[in-house]
Length: 193
Image 1 (cartoon, rainbow, N blue to C red):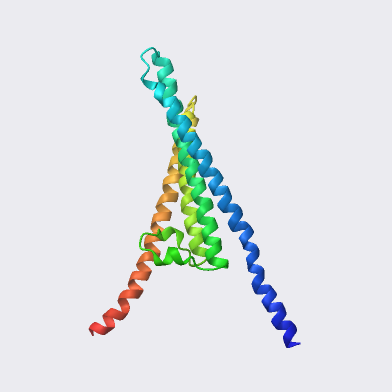
Image 2 (image 1 turned 90 degrees about the vertical axis):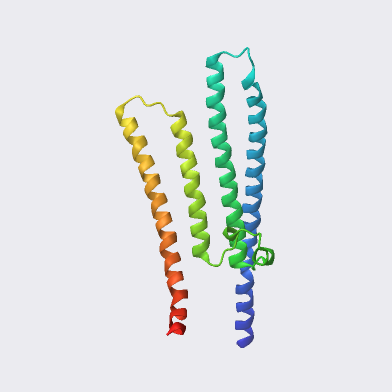
């Protein structure tokens, strides 16, 4: 019976490699979104070159300006989404398969790509998703036509909710950071006495 338990536990442990489908799929999705956002940037520059044309009327120039700003916001949104997919892919790999040695051993590696547990992954994804929401709100605000005072109230309320979300995110970072700092200082105080 012991051999069956050993065989089953080995199969169960190796089943974690199924997560590679999610790792590769989210990585490919991120690459696709990076590609699309980069193509959008090249098209944006092609249209922006016409901005200096002397024969352009003021209305057309204003429309081109507004369109360009809106497209820039869409590009930022695309790059942020691609970043989410990259962080998700690397985080899943580190959590289920193996540590990425190059990320841990390099001084130039970004700390955001080093995931130690599921809470790290969730918090990093939540921060980038919050940034996507902010950019999307900005994009919608650019295209919004305020026809009634209630529209202005809705816009103000959405800005206040985003500000509140940013405040809570910032507060939670400093709350956990202070706990860690106090825990590290405690042994030093003992040595001082």
